Image (tube, rainbow, N blue to C red; front, side, top):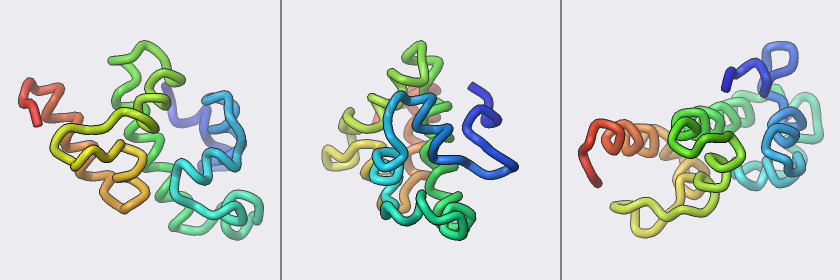
Length: 116
């Protein structure tokens, strides 16, 4: 899906992301490894860390969405499926630990037929 559906005035909007994934803004914050105030205070929503975490989460979900057929299913995979080669951690846990690039590289490798 396009990034515009997740944005408001050029910024990733936790409320819009929550609407797409049929959850709450608070859950989106937890999923991205952010505190509750990061999605409630306008200055925190605009912060580099908040926007980076939201972008990384959306990049991963969007990358696997074609594999699962919907954004909702891709989001469920992101949150719950342990990734081989990452000590049983999920994509969500890795993104929260600042390892989004490794998740994206893993997805590219799997798509290329190289198994982790």
